[in-house]
Length: 61
Image (cartoon, rainbow, N blue to C red):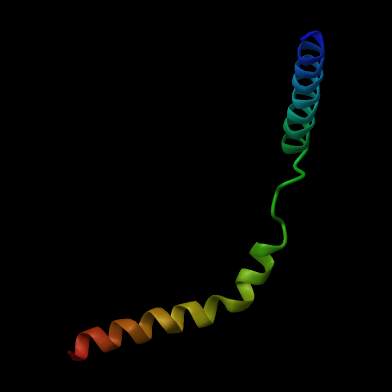
């Protein structure tokens, strides 16, 4: 029975360590997306054309 308590304590400590590592990574900007805005600029015209084509189709009907 005491083994369960030891394993439970160790698992909680490991979970807390991983949670702290995750919080630190988020604060340092590890998950900031700096690539998508530069690519979005290249495909923006296609998105505008798709929206205008749909609006033209709805006006004709």
